[in-house]
Image (cartoon, rainbow, N blue to C red; front, side):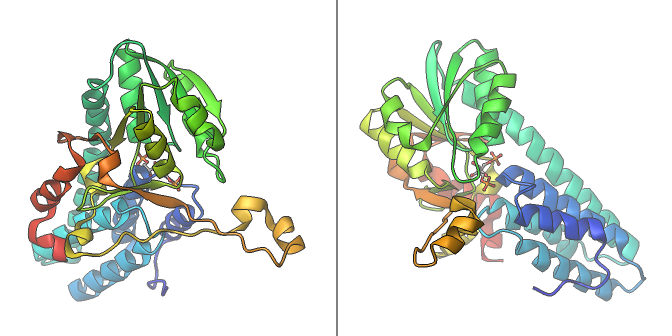
Length: 317
Ligand SMILES: O=C(COP(=O)(O)O)[C@H](O)[C@H](O)COP(=O)(O)O
């Protein structure tokens, strides 16, 4: 991917931090790219409006390639860039202001959305509920923290989430929120499901057919939950809904370096073994009881309504 000329170092660093997962989780990724666009705009030197717009379009394309699956990333970029395109700016300064304001608005919306999801989601829980979660999702954690504050949930099983062990982040965050955390290996999901009342996870993308793309292993939790008749909830801001799925596109599943699974040394010692590392999987709508969004708690089958309301004709952009 071509790096636009004169892109400030901090924008390059944000992209690299997303690629290497120092910035991770769909919500944080979205907020980080919105801020990256704002920083890029501020750093532009010159008075030529067309040059500025071209530079911003190139920056947007460059940032879009940071990670492929979390649709919050292109959605955050579209939110900011649509403002710039629709505004019809007369000067570069106006363009810079437009980008900065749109990015700020997106970040504020996003932070508010997570809080609203927490409050709405907590209503689905009952006193004494035992919960299971997978990976670390700030939206799912917000629900659990709000449910804890409401005196409903005490205990949560957290899956370690190999190979990158995001479960350890979730365990720390949820313990800090006052929950009793039990960290379990991924392979123990079915063993413990009998003790669980509800599952809650986050999302990297919600498709028009209500399927949810989230950290690999989510679909296995959903299968075990369905077998045990345990409610399965997804916490997802509306900017995680994928407009392109309305026109039949599939959400790309990221495959990362096999060394994340077994280490570089093992790979070198076993050149005849193929190691694959898909990092997301798809949970079909029929396994999902509800998606908790900042606009309300919906059936996964209502995903197209959210998409049409949110993006309308822009789904085709
Ligand atoms: O799958 C992951 C993170 O994957 P990775 O660690 O590979 O980025 C999270 O469940 C979603 O991104 C939602 O997170 P949030 O609710 O924080 O947006």
